[in-house]
Length: 187
Image 1 (cartoon, rainbow, N blue to C red):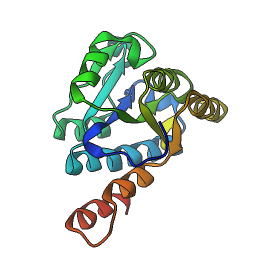
Image 2 (cartoon, helix red, strand yellow; image 1 turned 90 degrees about the horizontal axis):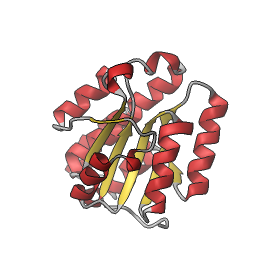
Image 3 (cartoon, helix red, strand yellow; image 1 turned 60 degrees about the vertical axis):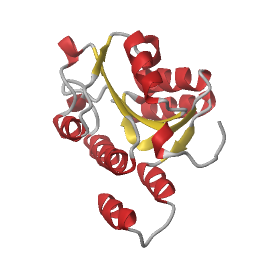
Image 4 (cartoon, rainbow, N blue to C red; image 1 turned 120 degrees about the vertical axis):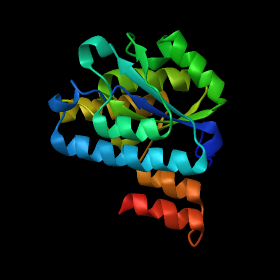
């Protein structure tokens, strides 16, 4: 639970509740950043073998995952897990799926920073996982709620980072075929 380098093979990318009926309530700039962060992280997962999980909060009411992110998930053959709990970790199906990945670390992004993201991050940290929160990959309806959520994630033990930081940390060096392929994600 420190600042050591994570390995893609044992770090789960967790996309929390980025659903079509929540998205319009978010500030447009935050959603643009979130979609970009998701594209970077899911692209890195595809190339480097990081497991990916996605949750949907009460999909009957909040709808499916945002179309742009759903397309990325579909390419990875990842199906969202429905839940009714705010924390993903309070849902047995999510915990089973997380355990099956063998991950000992997680990178979390999604909605909303002060509710489902925070509660999930807190519970992952309490389980002893190294947790990074992509600050460019989280949103809340109000910026003060987003800032409070990020602060709570950090107090819970998570590292605040960016999608690009994770990507370049996983790539380790430039000049490789992997670097040439993945560096395109940040342009």
